[in-house]
Length: 137
Image 1 (cartoon, rainbow, N blue to C red):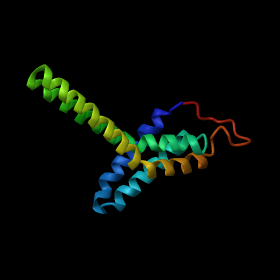
Image 2 (image 1 turned 45 degrees about the vertical axis):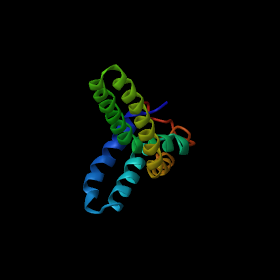
Image 3 (image 1 turned 30 degrees about the horizontal axis):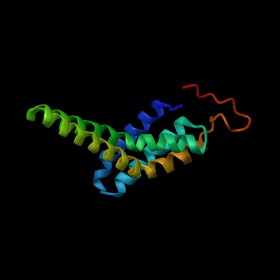
Image 4 (image 1 turned 60 degrees about the horizontal axis):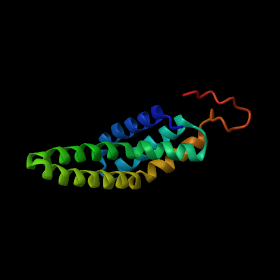
């Protein structure tokens, strides 16, 4: 099950660090994605796969939300052309959203890798021997 709190916190960390990372274009955003993904994976715990998933979602969340907003604007703007214009731009909006989601997940690979590392390093993860798995969210 997805820990949305971990995903949201990882996304917010990546977003804030990404804003500061504008001072070092490219490297600043890469570091922000790595740190945000690590935070999401660490908070989620559960090992390699769970950390990877949460890091991936944290890294891709901004692109998914942005793609959804652009798709909605395109779809609604088409209604100015009547029902036919609305149908055409609605289909275009769905295509835009699908491409935005795909690109977001591809660009979030570094966050996913960092999330996997964070998931492995979480000392409270349930699969570690001798631990009770205190994370209950």
